[in-house]
Image (cartoon, rainbow over all chains, first blue to last red; front, side):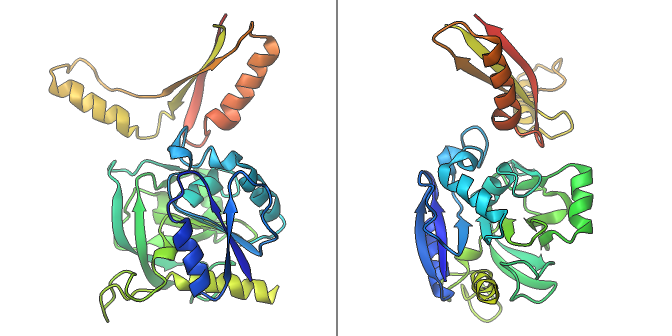
Amino acid sequence: MRIGVISYPGSLDDRDAQRAVKLAGGTPVPLWHADDDLKKVDAVVLPGGFSYGDYLRCGAIAAKAPATKEVIKLAEQGLPVLGICNGFQVLVESHLLPGGLIRNEKQHFVCRDQRLRVENNSTAWTNLFEKDEEITIPLKNGEGGYIAHEETLKMLEAENRVVFRYLDVNPNGSMNDIAGLTNSRGNVVGLMPHPEHAVEPGFGPDTEIATRSGIDGLKFFQSALKALVNN
Amino acid sequence: MPKIIVEIMPKQDLLDPQGKAVANALHRSGHDEIAAVRIGKRIELHFDREVTDKDIENAKDQAANFLSNDVIEDVVAVTVEN
């Protein structure tokens, strides 16, 4: 199973996402923002970072990149797409997910190991989690405050499209403690925290068992591989 | 140079952290008469020729769909300087 990772100018976590795909048992395929050839990958990850220097608005210019336009087209046909942090911002700017992300409520960049609840385990990227499973993965953002119109929020809640909710603290002032969302089909998922930084013992968040041993992010990528096998 | 000027502001009901920080600084320097500050964007589209009605139409379209995000911002003015 081949999972593409798009590199934009200013992407930071593309290599980590590729490594996560590999550790989950898939084949990572590097993709380039200016190239509309997605190399027939089975799924796509839009990585974290600061695409195009966050110019205009976070994710706004990346949403117009040739590779992203192709992702939008294929996502509407069911291609599994995961947007992490800046990738989530690209997904909302592309209108694959509703709402927007604004500067953190307290204006500071926040970097912490973040506890989340997985509220929807029927998406392409969360099918290996238990419903309401609590996980910890790193979070690092300056513009992660999720906002949407009241009707949109009601619709997201009613349709069970809030996939991840912040636990303990709401780090950025997101409405309804929303950390991540899916589209109505469940193939597109976007979230602010970083699953690709919690895939390998020794490099993840601290757990009760040992420091840096958290690998809760691995299931995101394993879920996608499972979803692809079942298709 | 002929240009179209697009002005964008954060939505009224949204917190504008930049504006708030600047307002605090103004208050610290004694300007208590300033009740609040809000900060937006001015985007200039430059042309090598006269701006046409079609250009303005295109600019309005881009202002609504790309230069601003209607979830968080409002386009408050699209004006021409020929």
